Length: 150
Image (cartoon, rainbow, N blue to C red; front, side, top):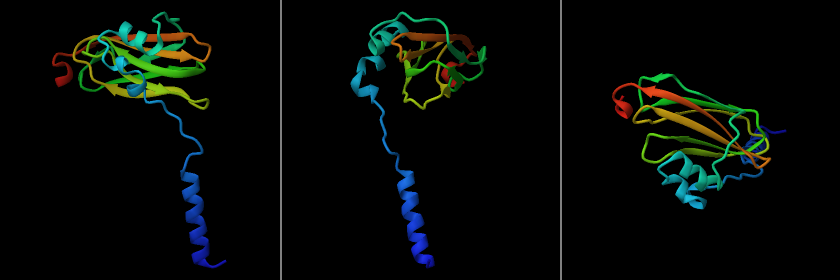
C-alpha cells in the first residue's frame, strides 16, 4: 500500500470515529425556561420536575465545610441510581438552578463542578431516576467573608 493511500484512509477512519453515532441532549433553557429564573430551590424543582418530594437517599454531595472563595466552590455529586437527569441547585444566589445534566444509558453520575455562592447556604443535588422518583442529597456550607468576591 502506498503511503498516501494509507494516510488518506487513516484520516478518513479518524474522521468517522470522531463523529458520535447519535448525540442527544435536551436544551433545558429552551424547554423549561422558568427553571432558570426561579428564586427558590423548591420553585426551581417544581419547574424542572413538576414536583418537589424527594427520597433523601442515594445521592452524595461533597463540598467543603467552609469555602474560602465563594466565587469557585468545588462541588462533587455522586450516585449509583439509574437516572435520566441530575440537577444541582443552591439557595443563596438570586436564581436557584445551577445546572441540569441530561443523562444517557452509559452515563456515570460522578460530576465535579465549581459554583458561585454569594453567601453561606445549602447545595442540593436532585437525581431523576428512571423509576420516576426524585432522589436528593445536600450539603450546607459556610462561605468565608467576601462571598463571590473571594
